[in-house]
Image (cartoon, rainbow, N blue to C red):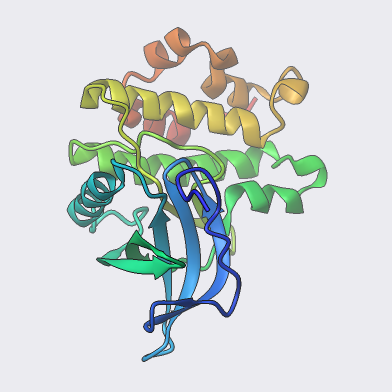
Amino acid sequence: MNHSRHSFGLQPGDSLTWKYEVIDRLGSGSEGEVYKIREIATGLTRAAKLYFRNHKSAKRLVRYARKLDALRDCDIVVKYFHSEEVRIGDTFIQCLISEYFAGAVLHDLLKDYRGGRMPPFEALNLLYDLTIGIEEIHARGEFHGDLHTGNIFVERRGVFFQLRTIDFHEWGRSPAIERRSDILSIARLLYDIVGGRAHYRKQPQPIKDVCCGLRSDLILKKFPTIFHLRAHLETFEWA
């Protein structure tokens, strides 16, 4: 199997070296797949990100591990433990072990809502928690680079959300451009979770005040930094 393009195909009960047992597949991205695993010696639950094998995988793992470690005090960032090589079939794969977060991927969580759409007030609550988390990252001179419904894990507790985000990405642009891209991604995420284009015209004004019709120039003029977006979410008035 060409692991650079396909799933690793691990199933519940499969071994990941002698140390770990696969519980479930959590998600996938352009760089690899994330699995929920059990540490055999302790019974503790962890998450394993397996990188598709290519000439950049080792460098990406190192960069990702260092970024997680640098941002270890940010609540929204998964906690990094260690990295190692694991053998799948005849191939050695780069693997990063981190905390397991018990929430659901936002993409899957939306399936619990009627029509797959989150109500506006609830969506803005989630967006506020996400904005606070990303603001912590930006305050450290860093960025996420790839925010979307497939790499944000959500756990609901009462009226609050607890979030974790995975799969940081770097597109080779300056950190300042990447941070502005995070703001645009947050606005796009709100647009998507309330129903996208098909339902945008009927959204209340507080939704439109953030999404700005997905015009990046208007969004960045209104929210030049993540601080401005957070301040807006704390102070806007419902009509």
